[in-house]
Length: 163
Image (cartoon, rainbow, N blue to C red; front, side, top):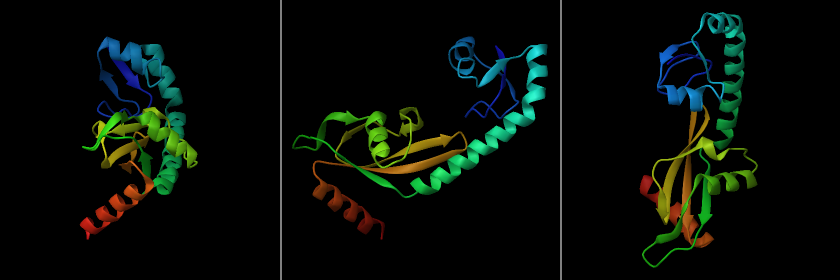
């Protein structure tokens, strides 16, 4: 199925690109989320009329995301969890957990904007990415520990290892 992208979609293309995608991807993701339009003469005309406006909206969203990225840059959050003697968690850390902690810090991030590089199932320091805009991705350091003191020790240990 051919679609016109209304916003930048990673691994597909930029605004205005006409791309071929699988029908299910278009029907279930791109079209309902208003990220694309089907390629028809009418939709091409609609897109041409709205192209300037779409690019302006995209630039505005990107600049807002860059401003938010400056606030988040270098931030690390601590998650206190129960774990066994071997350091294996009695559950895992999910994007929802991270989102809740960021909300408490006054940073509005949806759980769908948080991308874990690997499942977090052990105590330690790991990283995740916050996708604020398709072109703005911010790394976030996560410290998973059983207590606040242990988290501080892990952070100081990491700083020493970087030196």
